[in-house]
Image 1 (cartoon, rainbow, N blue to C red):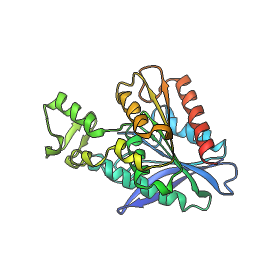
Image 2 (cartoon, one colour):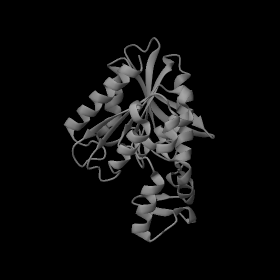
Image 3 (cartoon, rainbow, N blue to C red):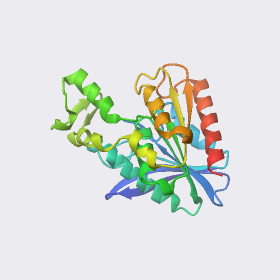
Image 4 (spheres, rainbow, N blue to C red):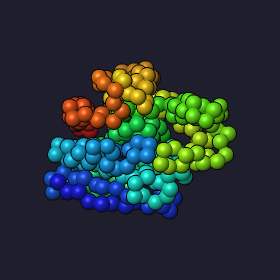
Length: 259
């Protein structure tokens, strides 16, 4: 397989990532774009994105994994990050990826982890003609709901849209625009405009994004979605057997839907 560093731009800022191509890199391959989670990067815990990209390449599927602006090695700072900004990055990634001579633009899917799942859902709903399938791993559906609950518990803030200053969150800051933007991005409503197949993988005891988000995605998508519940209390499928199962079910889903 071929692995190479790539760069593309959004709003005059560089986005950096890795492109994975099967075999010798010749030909038109189906492709997958991987979208990382909140405070994550193009590697993700236990190098799961690297490993999954190589897993796909061995099965004839190309992939692109990149750092959203403000994360990893891409331009920008994290306190400038908004979900809408990440959706914009994802759209630029689709444009870049499908413009490569090695990629079959008619056979492209998204895989999103956690908040990257929310970005995947919204991006698919806004660009249904550009994608054939979507896989949601521990995906957020309503970020406004999650963040509002957290801000109320930690700081006694009742309306996050009124936050005027940056807020510390572990080792980073969240800017006021992040909070104001949350009402504009709802995965449950936006993914309904996507008519392709969707795979939902979620741990029943997820301590970060409640399993109810997976159930709600399934409810709004109906027969277009397959829900694969995982036992345990993991958010990033951080057990060897879990990751192996995650790769297997997602790989099978992608092979079937990117024919």
